[in-house]
Length: 151
Image 1 (tube, rainbow, N blue to C red):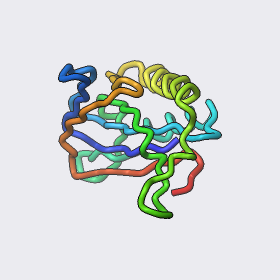
Image 2: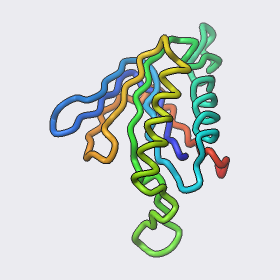
Image 3: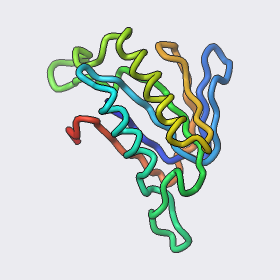
């Protein structure tokens, strides 16, 4: 799984001009399920995301996690994160999981986040829909995560 994590003041995702997910202070996760991802990969990613210390403490140091601040989480699926642009001018998406498999793993990922952070608001976009994402990146703080630890 590949995830772009952004610390946000607020974010929302809409489909056909209808807001389907909206959060205040917390994290926006833009996620792609890759071929060969497993349930265990996703659970490891959930633990990493929920415990990353990216929010400031009283001394202004990034020492607090989204759990610590009781922040919100918005998850948006985006298979284009699987794009490989190393050759030519058209990205290759051959490393992305097939849609049927990705839908199941994406759903499991969101459910695992919601279960592990049951006291937090967890919202999501619509899998395979054309979405518009509006956000206010706080910092900005943006991190790249990969379940296979490629980066």
